[in-house]
Image (tube, rainbow, N blue to C red; front, side, top):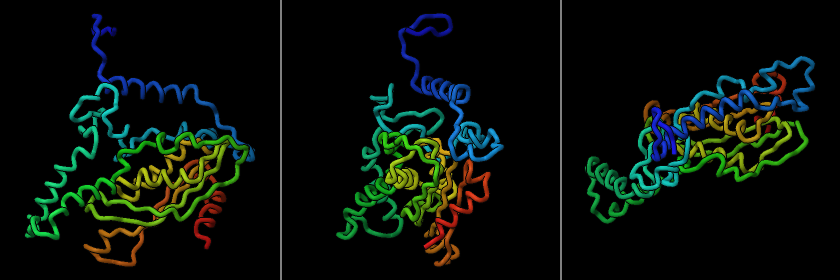
Length: 286
């Protein structure tokens, strides 16, 4: 039973209200009661700014909403939305309970597209193309259905180490949100543990979560760095992506040899030039 405007009611508050309240509560508790990170790495410095010790708690970037990142996976199991045709997530647009349920509508859209191009969608070569294209698009954007917690699967381990961990040249495929054409490349991730390490394969899976969405490379780089921060609370995180964008190769300026390099440096990697240089040297070494 809940009380609304001084009156008792048996109605369950909307899940959006519950999620909004719980989200604010968690953030407040994290800031007020969060443990101060005192890893052995940062303790090597005689005078370490508080912002460096707790960058993942106090860094204003931590509280920024990154566009294109749903707060929850798109699923019909969200409390209060089990029977919804479309499930609503705070201020985001209505989303389908399962993406596969949209296959028929997506196939029809591809059929209209083929017709608009002057093709005959009923000819043998194109007869099943709309269905195939719809399924392919669902695969290209499967990251919308994945959450960080699901992918990590508790593969976080206590380990007394403060040395840099780097996994480089992780292959990445994504879809440009401006033209709906692919961009691809390699991702390198480094972090400085503070008592916890992440299963190495999970770094590659984090890349998959955020790359398999409609993206821009700049946002993708930051999302990966923030996900690693959230997972193991390290002293610092560095991410570098080198990508080739087909929207520049196949259309527009058509520069086939151009590459785009983006980086995000958090914590020690941002504040300590020597740590940043060590990471970049490891990434660029053959």
